[in-house]
Image (cartoon, rainbow, N blue to C red; front, top):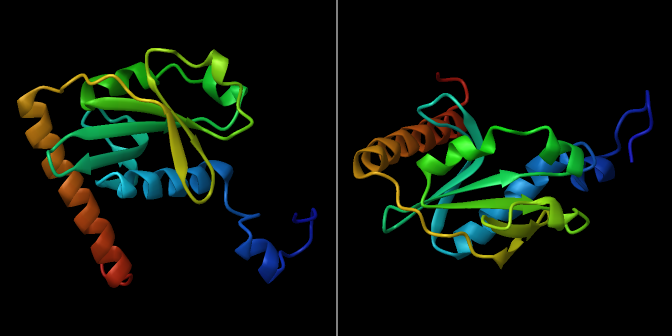
Amino acid sequence: MVRAGAAATPGEVAAGALVPRAVRLARGVGRALGDAGYAAITEFSLKSGRRVDVIALNAAGHFAIVEIKTSEADFRADSKWPEYLEYCDAFYFAVPEDFPRDILPADQGLMVADDYGAAILREAPEAPIHASRRRAQILRFALTAGGRLRRFNDPGFG
């Protein structure tokens, strides 16, 4: 772990000590969703202006949204997640192994995640989104992913 006032060693950076836990869990969630046939992106802004932790799209055009919670305090301080439900076909909470899962709503999907993957403990109920919202969101998803890829491939441009 990094000591106050001390520089991080290469090993600490490589081990993820400086990467926030939610970011590391999002990587594991993205890997699991990819294995399930989804393309996932993080920190996606919905049309409502809210930003979700992870959104994923599969070949059938279905969206899954995953809200990452790293602690009980993180969950209790969040009242915005129900607003995400109208933007996805399936909604999941993703939490670390040591999270008190009994405080999460039983009517939503549940994943346990770490830095390298995630396991679905409870499938999310299917709740199809409206066709016009789906079409608009697929376009927003594609433009967001394409813009990020462009910035990755050409960091000095835009």
